[in-house]
Amino acid sequence: MGIDLLQGTLDLIVLKTLSWGPMHGFGIARWVQQTTGDVLQVEEGSLYPALYRMENRGWIKADWALTENGRRAKYYKLTAAGRKQLASELAAWAQMQRAIGRIVAAKPAKREPA
Image (tube, rainbow, N blue to C red):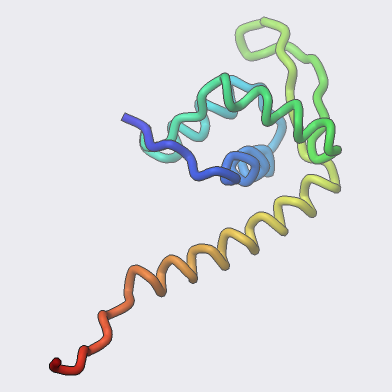
């Protein structure tokens, strides 16, 4: 059972995944699933449009190569612009975590008796 990704987190997840080195689309999806213990699953219908969008923005570059099984696949890798975007996305994610953490840890205010 997977969790739906928060809107906007797919770019961060893909960029972070590619920070470990070039991968093809199936490899990206598999790495995310394995790394999160099957909690997060990236569906093809979301992944490939995101990859094309990131490629058009210059964050990633794609080249054809052979997989470990001898099949041709498009391998994606981060560009300099992608590394810069990843840093920006990580900073925004950290800010979001802090904000949500404050909400989750908040105690109700004491109310005055009526």
